[in-house]
Image 1: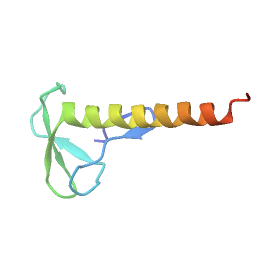
Image 2: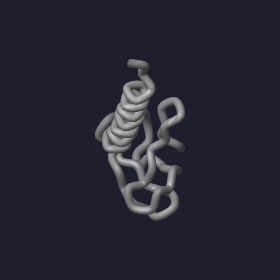
Image 3: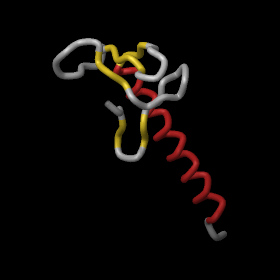
Length: 73
């Protein structure tokens, strides 16, 4: 499974892989643990979602900075 929101995909903090498998059956919850299919590193679902949120904030801040630079005075 790939954890993503729109065009931002979570990556394994160890190897950068994007494919994960849940360690337990059933719906994902914030504390659910997922294993990276490439290296076996275990991450919590919440941690992967936080990573996506951080990337979204970086992109938003870059866009704001660019708008400020391009703004006519």
